[in-house]
Length: 346
Image (cartoon, rainbow, N blue to C red; front, side, top):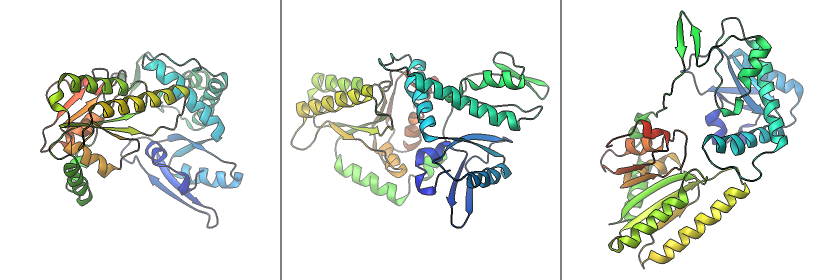
């Protein structure tokens, strides 16, 4: 279990519950994050750092009362499991050439063990008639393991449920646009908007937000800006690219090399086209707060998603939701999943 101070924002967004433990008071707090889902049993992973067995049992009992079933996994094991998921499977699924050290036997062994741990918990709680929803490339072995353990009968791409056949299809996810629109008039958001407009007065703002990942096309985007300013020198000093690079917990040799390439390229372009008043690239390597994000979306005349390969990528939806007055332009790579839905003028 994690004390509340150990739970970061990314963990909170992925776990079905957020909980904190106060050991002296023996008090547990639970907060459901997905009450809108009609799911009877929720099974999720939770890392442990050598907790006392009776504390784990109490927490499990508390979670079970709300139909949550934790899979307790040692941090070292889940770290290797996540390494295989994100550094081996993810590149392969996005048509990217893996690095020379992309396969690690210990990572693969850990991946198999974690899938087995999930299978054990599911096998203990599953009942006749239950439908089991397995989500994500982190658990790709789990369906096969469950078929062996509990003799599940399945057909390719469909299940039979309540007198009807349910087929598998591709249904791109969306966002809650009202959450973005309703917060645009927030005082803090308006202050950020004012600051950005003052900083980039009379300058067209191009913005882009990416993980520093080889599939996101960040160097290609910078090269495109270099080419644009070289061919259109009248725009020097009149346009800025606000490039936000979100932090990543994976520091591999490939990503460190990519980081160096991006920094050197940004510095070269700034040195080539800077004036006394401005530089063409405003580089930010940090995660923006939600209100900072809304402000940047609002003032941006152009938003670029330059993915070479990508998953869904809902940032285009967010940008469009915030363009209530500005009527900006979205430049969207055809290799992002959102391009299936956003195929016209926005």
